[in-house]
Image 1 (spheres, chains in turn brown, red):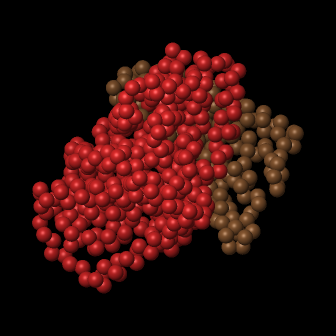
Image 2 (spheres, rainbow over the protein chains, first blue to last red; image 1 turned 180 degrees about the vertical axis):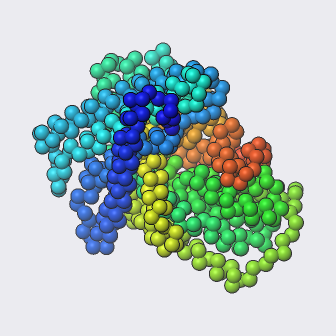
Image 3 (tube, rainbow over the protein chains, first blue to last red; image 1 turned 90 degrees about the vertical axis):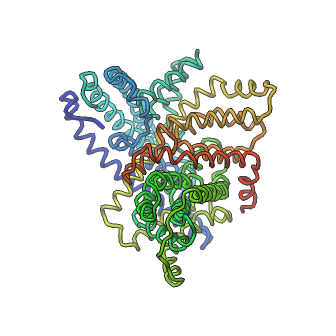
Length: 176
Length: 427
């Protein structure tokens, strides 16, 4: 997790809106998981009891609910330290060197996820302009799925940026 | 160098404590860039997030995590332990065996071994200590019993292996049942043998038959949930995705009925589900990028060809693979091990004539051993923290169970039918 005392002032101001967005996105992700549960149960009931399966549930889940459930909490999980790390070797590595590596690697990851965010924003825009829809019983629009990846990647990149600068404190002998 | 440099970078990043997913993405990107061009890299990077998480079966993971979270809220595990302990108290080592059975039962309602170990530590260790078990022995029983959850369906580990390997998730979940029961039996037998050498004082507490049957009330919701999930998958009535949705809803109703599902606990269960799902999701996306690198370099084909040219029995190569997994288990968690090895090792194993379904169970069993062995045996740390027992005491006591589970691995290698029989009978 980031220590706000150890990051430059502009990033401290960034932390507040990013935190707000993370909490909002995790609430949406939670809602999507609950909706996925409900849709699956209703589909099972309709399929096996009434022999009238929901024709739209598969596309709806794959296009919106799955990406929402998996992507939207990327940044929240990073903030709360849920993402897996190998901690065993860390204590054997020089703190300053580790701080430098984590800072640099963090910046590269910011560029990577920032680019992914930008790409999906452009994709969503074109899909919206072109009226792209999924071929199926219900022509679900494609752009919301791209927007989910855009928003998640953008907030994740911003959280990575904040955390990367917090690692600089290791260079000064502090805690990250 | 094109092949080795990304692997060196990957292990360098992992050693520095960079999150596993980001390490995979960066090392994979470097590998793709070295093997092809910047244009191909950009194409793969932008396609991966959109394509990696579109498999319908992926819905089973958040559903089963949600189910486990709701069951945790319901508090059924501690009641289940009390009920089982009433039935086993006449047996020598009954409380220890009750811990093992509760571990297996917990596995049937949750796919997380760490959650199982934490819960068992809180409920069973005080009971074991009361009956004269040493702190090391009680801690090691709780830690090792927690691992059974990784094999008994719904196991998130087996689902993850299925997604990586393309093996039927339904068959994998069913295939975990017999080995899971065998693991529980092996641990129980080991406890009995240990107590023969160091007997415990006799207990005076007796329970009437009425008390015993009264305690079974708690088993009702557990049995319903087990039938809802595993029963439907086994009979082929519902798919794993449908069963997972029903399981999550069933667990929600059980938590609601327990009266423990406050607004705070409900939102905590959901935010935990979202965090763990996102952690797995990011790993899947980034492993997709790393997977492209492995495919582009043709590493897997080369390994298979190399293994084919060796003039040794397939079992010698399999033994080397088992040792590799044991070594990786010392330092890495299960998900990381699966991501790093399955795309490369599975084609090799199948080319040797072994069944991928059987291999999945063997890999998970080896990973089970890894989560209780030093230096990063996560279950031992969890139990140590929950029960306030020194880590070194649990590590030294758990080694005997590790040895007995290694014997079981040998048995499952010699008799693969033990794994493959049950899925072959499912609907």
